[in-house]
Image 1 (cartoon, rainbow, N blue to C red):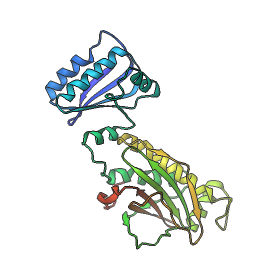
Image 2 (tube, helix red, strand yellow):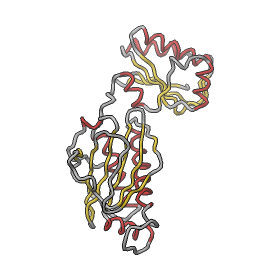
Image 3 (spheres, rainbow, N blue to C red):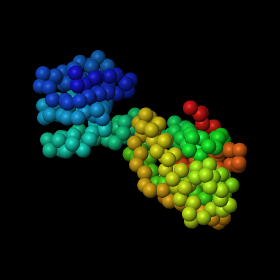
Image 4 (tube, rainbow, N blue to C red):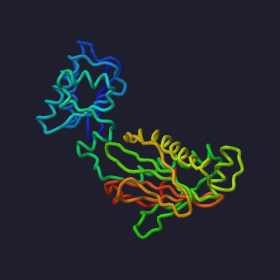
Length: 287
């Protein structure tokens, strides 16, 4: 069976697998039975493991769309590869079988998740990733402290060197920054490169951008499981006693301090559109 239909309480999930092209399999009939039993009007079709979909199967999905429309419901596909997207477009069904990058993007379309939701569930992956990367890559134990919203009156400078990355998804747009005092940064340089250095220089400053990139990559693994799908730009680095952390945008910023044996450093997550207004600034739980 190339599909499985599951009740997710607020929506129906259809998980596709392999080639969806067997003419003897009637998705439409099975879906109608489940819809009548569960009384749900939203449907997400997970296509991440689907390699092929023929025109007959697409017509079944189109009928699912029509069935849901009678209930003022909706259907969204998630995770279609480019080949599947082209096939759906060539069949003229791309306007009704819309593909989203992530589960969260589909839930936002349904109104089951608010686009302005930004809570500890988003912060924790960055917190966990920062701890893990510092411990494994940099050989430094980092303990997270209570996060807080950054106010316009707060000092712009929290460290001596900062790595900044622009990040985007269907439900989030903003930046990640990690800002380190010189003492912590030079300790990281020594631990990672095996070189004793006495100052931040043009030759070692790029390391902070690399660390930010590794943290983001690690956080993405956990965020995917939460339904986020993030895209990132190349990191930029700024340093110097008077440098400013320049985020991309004018939104609100959450600051997460981390305590280490050699001092305190800061991670910042900023959104371009005010999503952080609802953030829970209690101390995040550590997985």
